[in-house]
Length: 199
Image 1: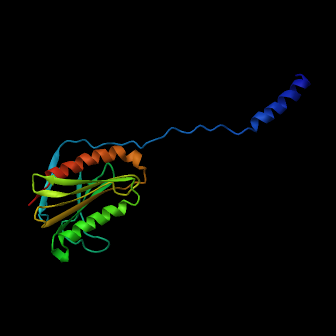
Image 2 (image 1 turned 90 degrees about the vertical axis):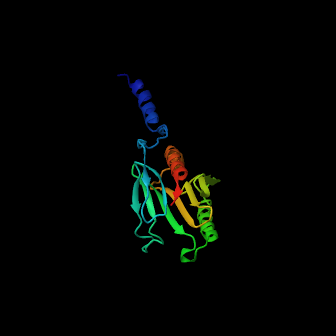
Image 3 (image 1 turned 60 degrees about the vertical axis):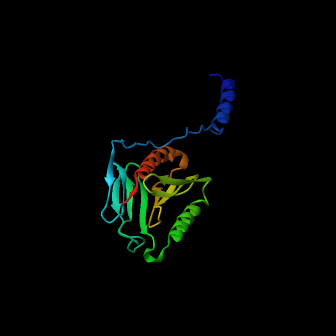
């Protein structure tokens, strides 16, 4: 090999070997979502709850036995679990006037809990609810990095009953990647509200 060739090639190799590598960003990845199959509904009608509604068959009902190490305020506190999404719809019922809570106080509590999430929300949509089955209330839909994207409360026209629910996903994922699940669950929540009846 020619000595002048080596003198030329060795510094050239040294220069190219020392250059910074060129990184290419990975494409954005989203978690794979296995949606449960919508095969129908079943009635939710527990004896200690003065209410009923149609519940998708893939939901599990978990009775609340403790609330922050205390007993729940009423035996009609429960969670609706979607195992495929590791999400829960926390549900609580209050008879108006029990334990000194008036309807206005219960409604104010529901708005306060919704406004607490509004600190991080990009947008909140408050949608009035009124069904032909003597059910009234308010639905709160949040957009942005909030813990609960859907909350609602339901009552009757005489304000004797008060039911509140809030949806939570047990995940740290970004809202954009969870958007398909929010849309899927929103259809379920709409079905629960539209089939809701006071006993």
